[in-house]
Structures are given as C-alpha cells and as structure tokens.
Length: 93
Image 1 (cartoon, helix red, strand yellow):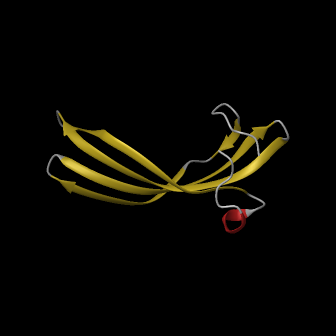
Image 2: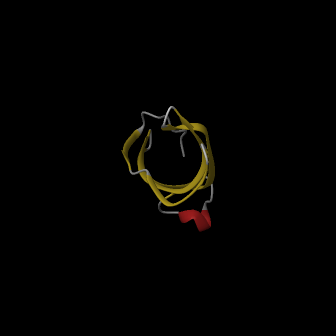
C-alpha cells in the first residue's frame, strides 16, 4: 500500500471510547481507546482502513481551566479493511 499523507483521506471517523480519568488536585491523567475507520486515497484508488490505538494524556489546571500538558498515542494496529488485524497487523505507514 502507498504511503498516506494527511490530505489523502476522503473519510475519517476518529472514535474515542472507554475514558479512564484520574484527578489528583490540579493534575489529571486520562486514557482513551481509538478506533478509526477511514478511506485512504492512494494512487491505486480508495482503500478502506482500520486503525486502533490508545491515548495516554496528562492535564494540568491553569487559572481554573484544564489544559493538556502531555499527549501520547500508541498504535495497536493499522490494517486494510479486507485484511483485518489478524492478517495484517500494521500496514506500511
């Protein structure tokens, strides 16, 4: 599969689920799971893709407002729809 560029998506649903948030005074940590079906536009034509991973973020309260102080993301899989994650865990990124 061809390399993808940020402008090569014709459809994308960035679905975050199962938030786990812990607050400790003026600091907090949060974890979310991402499931992202999208359509990649490649030179070979449109390709349906599944991606999944986890966000692990940290927050700090500044002047009464919660701000992101650290954002991390770890991929678990990125695969063509037809293959599924059991056949092709990580496509060429």
